[in-house]
Image 1 (tube, helix red, strand yellow):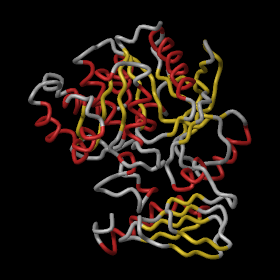
Image 2 (tube, rainbow, N blue to C red; image 1 turned 90 degrees about the horizontal axis):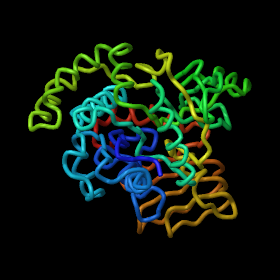
Image 3 (tube, one colour; image 1 turned 135 degrees about the horizontal axis):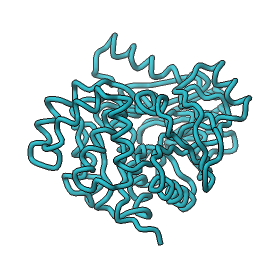
Image 4 (spheres, rainbow, N blue to C red; image 1 turned 60 degrees about the horizontal axis):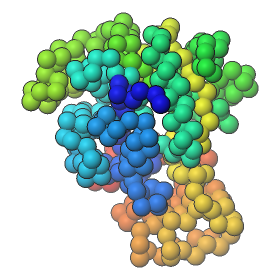
Length: 361
C-alpha cells in the first residue's frame, strides 16, 4: 500500500458560486448545500471522498473567513487549525500559496492534493487511483500535475491543457495551458484533439509549488512568506488579516501554470463534473420522461422539456411551453433563464447588485 503519511489534501471552499445564483448565495454558497438532494452537502461529499486517500487529520479546508463556522458544522472531524479562513476572496493563487506555506510548517516534504469543494465524482475509487499515480510521479519529479478531462463540447468556462509528450505512467508533459478561452478558440482546441479540460485538481510537493510561486508570482510569494513564523501559531490570524488582502487577485492557472515549464497532466476519466452551473446540475441529475429535473414535489408541467425546475417547499409552480430552461424560485428571487445562455447568469447577478445592492445576493 502506498505510504500516505506525507499526503495532505486542501479543499478549496471559499467561492460564492455566482453562476449558481440565486440558489448559491453570499450567506450560504452552493458547496454548503445539498444541491444533489442526497442528504449531504457538496463539501461533505468531497471530504468523505478524500478519506480514502489520507486520514481526516491531513485534510484541510480553505474558505472565506465568513464560512469557517459552516465548515466546522459540516465537518466536525476537523480541528480548528484545519480550517483556513481567508480575510478576502483573492482567487486561487493566494489561497494555494497560503495553504502551502502553512503546511510547510507542519511537514515540509508533504505531497499536496488541491481540489475544489463542489465537484461531482461518479467513480470515486477510479479517482483515488489516479491521484495515487500522480502522487507517485510528483514524489519522483519536480512536477506540477493537473488532472485533465476529455472535452465533450467547446466550453468557455474551463482552462484548456495542450497535451505534449508522454513522460511516464500515463502522465504527459503540458505544452501549453490556456485559461478560459473565447468560444472560437475553444472550438479550435476541441477540433484539434490535442486538448483536455483542466479539472482544477492539482498534485505537487510543497517545495515544488513554493519554488514556482517564488519564480513566477514573486509578489504573492513575498507577501505571504513574511508570515513564515506566524503560521500555525496564535499570530496567524492577525498576520492574515493585515497582509492577505494585499495579495494580487488571480487564479493559480494564470499566476503559475501558464508560465511554468514543469507542468504535467494525467488524462482522467472518473465521471467528473465541476457542477459550476445550473445546466451541469441538470445534466448530472435524474430526469423524468421529458428530460426535466424537478426539485419540488408541487409542480405541474405542460409541454415542458429538458428544463430544471427548483422551488421551495410549499410553493406550487405551474409551467407551460418551456424547452431547455432554468427555473429557480428561491422565495425572494425567481430566475427564469435559457440554459443556452447560462454563462450570463453571473453578469445578471452583478447587475442585480448594481441596481438593488446586496439584499438579493
